[in-house]
Amino acid sequence: MQKYIPGRGAGVLCHISSLPNKYGIGSLGKEAYEFVDMLAKCGVKYWQILPLQQTGYGDSPYQSVSCTSGNPYFIDLEELSRQGLLDREELKSAERKLKNGVDYGDLYENRYKLLRRAYARFNIKDAAFVAYIESGRAEDYALFMSLKSRYAGVFNTFPEAYKYKEHLAIYEFRTSVYREEYCFWLFLQYEFERQWAALKNYANSKGVHLIGDIPLYVAYDSADVWAHPELFKLDEDLNPTAVAGVPPDYFSKDGQLWGNPLYNWDALRASGYDWWINRIAHAKRMYDILRIDHFRGLDRYYSVPAGSKTAREGEWMPGPGVALFEEAERRLGKLNIIAEDLGVIDDGVIRLLNESGFPSMKVLMFAFDGEKDNGYLPQNIGEHSVAYTGTHDNDTALGFLLKQTDKEFAAFKKGLRSALGYEGVYTPVVDRADAVRGLVLCALNTRSAIAVVPVQDILCLDNASRMNTPSTPQGNWGFRLTAMPSRSAMAQFKNAVIRAGRA
Image (cartoon, rainbow, N blue to C red):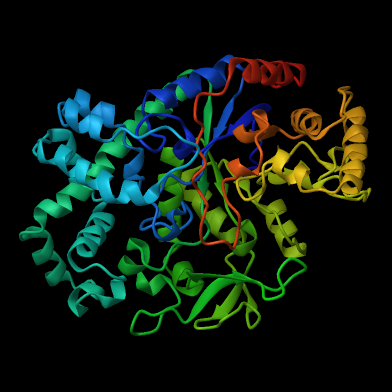
């Protein structure tokens, strides 16, 4: 395979939902464009986001109703108003007090009602919209959401003709009184894709490249599983026979039971990996670079019998390996992919990284444990990698350091000072805020091709601004900026980017 070597540069991690505005959640509106302008002025070449998918249970972008959908909450309401689809009073009704958090319950109750009003004024005979419908790329999503609107519940509780997606029943459903409902969900995806394409084009014109995210697994109650049950490990009643997780380790005596349905890789292989390749093709249209979450699951994945209470009873099973990417590259051309290879890595994952040629991830928050062979130490990081201070699954850098004892922080500080000296960067590291700034400098000055800093670490925010705590079902995905990052914070970051030779 062709080796993907990204251009040297700096990146900022900030999800669309975290952008400030007065409508309760970040959007593809003017604040997103202001964020691009800010990145460009700082010499930042990469903007990394989390999955753009419509969220499902738990409001997680990694649990979606469709892996190729766009989140309707991100649709810019002011753009709908400019199109004459919402009036001033309706726009005013969507305003919420700006706070550091997303109220997903309020959004669920009120945003779709507002979007339905916009749809009621939309011309569904518009030529561009008709062409979008005829493309068929959002058909399964729109059908699935229409059925959910009619029957609610998990898809395996739908009437059998719909549960098993019988052709005639689906045709009659789509062309009957539910035609309008079907077109509503298509309208949401049409408007999302139109607005996203405009934002991406703008970012690219400013020299900012978008790094997107592909979750390895999909949710069980999704259009993906409903439309393609043969590609997943399900029984004849469409119930999972095995689910995803990770085995017990130092951090969890019972392992982690994620519950996502597992792929039937034999069926996928027999189909030439069509479903996965279509998914990658969609992501290539949406982003400039793709990050594949839980990359190790494509070498070997952990299979837990359905119904298990913990992940203790699972076993490792072989994944598709490099064959998936070879076929994807043969059909789609060069793949610009970052492999999320964090966690326990064995020889098989290392071999898959080498065979695929994808850069791996290095999180400097894990570097300073006193071990000289720690793979995250700057002196042990090669150019073919992407360095991070932390990720969306970690605490913020300040939150992480505030939890350390004085003894632990003293050891961390010693290691960080040594690393900064190794990289030829000299900055005082006295307290924990100093250490956050030092960690940012450390990441920017590594040999890694790309260095990504979460916006929380640029602003030195504590763990109240953490995005996600794995294995906790509540209190995640809500972080929001209450204003655009300050000029002083971004000026300091810009100077660091320039000094590191990444502008």
